[in-house]
Amino acid sequence: MSSPTTIIRNATEHDIAGILEIYNHVILNTTSVYSEQPHTYEMRLAWYTDRVNNGFPVYVAESGDKVIGFSSFGHFRVWPCYRFTVENSVYVHTDHRGKGISKLLIQPLIDRAREMGLHAMIAGIDADNQVSFNLHRSFGFVEVAHFKEVGYKFGRWLDLKFMELII
Image (cartoon, rainbow, N blue to C red; front, side, top):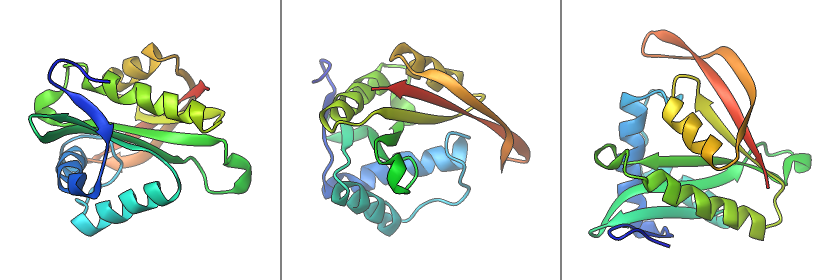
């Protein structure tokens, strides 16, 4: 699947540097990730290896041989009774936001979850991130929880919403 200039494909280890650049920008400049310290290449490689070893997908959006976004899902919780539920992640390079790249990256996650016989997909979204909220809602996700002041970043308390899609 692709748009005229963007290709969505399975990530490889060669994509880790591009994924890391996007993720660290999100960490340092947004509340989309409740983390304050940039990740190292080794941390992102371990994340990628863990996903692949668990049979979870990692997709990249590529344009002009550059990684401009990525998506994945992994364990929602590691206890056995949660094995049919996953949590998704979708991030787009700051220069490419607002161009529909996230939509291209979410649909393959949903399709793959169906193929794997999964039952539910969760999205944890900062309550102020209306763009991500609307994006997930457009794919049928519904809000199922709103946690007040569970994160603290940039000198303020953050609310977290959970959205769910029953596959």
